[in-house]
Image 1 (cartoon, rainbow, N blue to C red):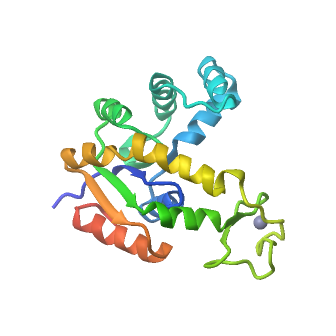
Image 2: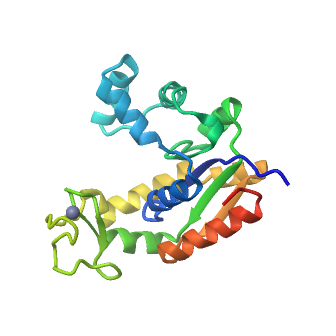
Length: 219
Ligand SMILES: [Zn+2]
């Protein structure tokens, strides 16, 4: 049986470990992980007309309109060798974007990481990050050897402002309202892979690999 080409999106609520799983999958399958946030930041850094427009939204803490996001993503993706396969992170993030992207390039897999809000809040509220090397710790499950100090680079760990419970709850509400309807969209397209993300990083990764293999992807 011919193996399926991997053209995937990975999505899930904040705290579901989407970034980590995306990275692990990209390494294992040897495909690029394309972060929408990185593409937009690169566009802003280059100061192009699209980048300047995006900067207006970002600097005012507003979500950019779909049209602008589409324009930047398509422009940047033109430089990515798509034949090899890829994993998108952070785009599409709503049903409109999903429909738009399918017209440009039909995704073959939508990885949905499921996680109850209570678990996401607990994870993020206990998360501490090293501002220098970006290592992430969890006060209960993955504490640093020396309290408050990064084990890798000895940086001072911080609790990010957006990891405060009230902010997390707001972001989760936005996720449920805006992004979660993609579950219905991709299920109808027959490409949805939903997994329970409330498990250790390695076990979740193994489950994903196993299920992707069954779906006909080279893992
Ligand atoms: Zn560090």
